[in-house]
Length: 412
Image 1: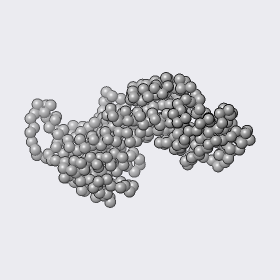
Image 2: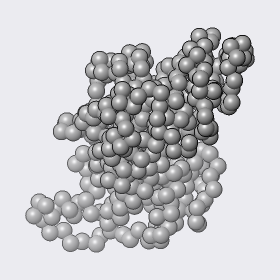
Image 3: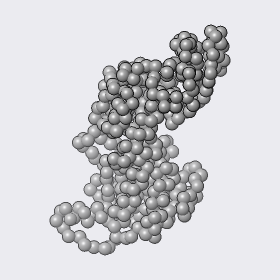
């Protein structure tokens, strides 16, 4: 039974909506698995548009531009899961999704290599001052000059945020002959010969190239401002492939115009256009030795395929088996499949006595539980029950009336 694919709700009736031009690979995977009602749109939808579209959607796939608000979730009468085909989940109101019992998945590791490679590439481009020479050549100006151009080998790379991407950058940088210094608010085991800086100031003072790989939270917003740009080595380089709110661009622009920072590569911005072709403005435009890219750090064919595989697999596991590993809302639960049973999912508010009531009601109705799994977080509890086939519909009906129930679903 380990390869079981069928669900109690016919796959051809499960409506799936993919937005923001999600990889065709993900669309194809769902169709291959028997889900025929798959709709793909190339753009993000506004809150008003989503409210109209989402009423009968069971699975929603998004990237970073679509914002899932409480109003959207309130209108989503049949929504079981949201797949964020990207790294973050900031665009989803996780509190509202938790209260609705909607599982939210993402792909936190799938584009790690793509981002890491581009960081190293930009380090080489900037330390050789290639942006200026490329622009000059396009303008018909011959700029054959070694002044201010250096090798990466022997220089110190400072990595702020030593997580999945930061540590991958560390490995690639060492392969290029760089010294690596990193700073993280959590204790991290260094890879290779990387060294742990005790303070952010220490890292900034010693690094020739500083690269940011931190999440978006209150502690990281405006992490880099005039207050610590002054600690950067004169002539150093800043790379931001993390979040747009981490760097104050007005301050960075000022330090570049003054010559204190010699180069910058930015892929994320405090404000970004909604769609391709929209006008984009930034204080960093038209400055020398600056590389600006439109949030493409993880935009490779390989990364998009990896994301498609990762998120699709998580959605299949939840819809078809009740497995919630990787969820940001419903507690993560992985469980083996059993032969000869039906499986029921019960999501409820985390209140005392719910599990006791479930077991008592099923026992009073002579329903035998062959397997039971429970996990809770601060807000909700998630129970998966395997019961005998002949009584599964009755059991699901009983469970839907348990006090503090959010939703119940008969999986198979």
